[in-house]
Length: 266
View (tube, rainbow, N blue to C red):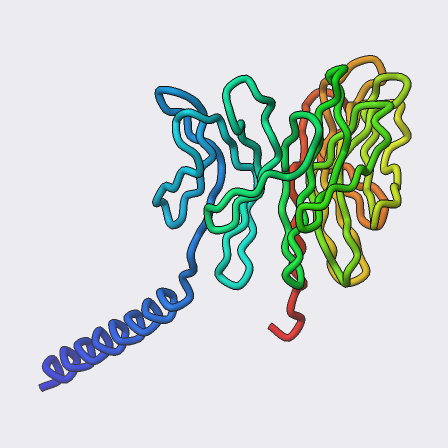
């Protein structure tokens, strides 16, 4: 009788555990969301800008045109992708935004690339750069397809990341100086802030705003006379933190930053 009772308890325990596990699994399955990844896919002809939704591939262009995807943003079930593409053979590539697969070429005079996309209050922002005739580039931002130069074009510059918070538009990138060193920069509504002093090559690759705090990820060369190795950097409100050892023996670069507020009640 005792054995039967124990066996019964084991059966009940297994049943309860299975039920709990099943419920937990169901809860987890309900939390599963669509996962989007963007990049480019090389076929027999050329690179194709690509979005993978839950692992299923979708190419933006056919094999007759080069394209590449750099950034994705989802808003109200609409999928926005920033990148670049060629519109015809022997024509420079153009910065492009795809909305649910429909392309919009961003207005530029020369070849250009969109590196980041952000959507806020139905406004579509894209960061990127436009090539100059001398091989350099302008740092740019587009709002709903309207272009704004962030730099004057005297020295080469690139913007890599855009973030919008409380109607303020933040852009991270770099601009070369007279010593041919990249200066990591943050633009807020077009007003520039230098994150590095220009004595070493540097760039800012990502910006994220949480409340009143502005975070920027990037890197800076460890030596004045060479570009390698790099030190990964995080700037919070302009105050820098080195993310790897600064002894020059190793190299690291930080390309993206995301901030999550901890829940003290947990």
